[in-house]
Image (cartoon, rainbow, N blue to C red):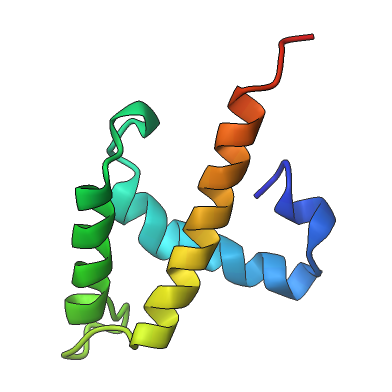
Length: 90
């Protein structure tokens, strides 16, 4: 967020991304080292969001559209991480 989104998206969009990262991505996947992250982890994470992802603790999960939005955010972040990891050190 700090290195890419802060300079490439509008402030309101950045706030939304920060909320998703803090409320869902870090608690759901933050304990897994990036080098150990597997597709099964992501599938379980998305399934958990669909089943019980509401922050207000009401029964039910997030909508498939919301989970798709989270997936796109995570995919974009991981794509940047891979690209940046391949850059030579300066």
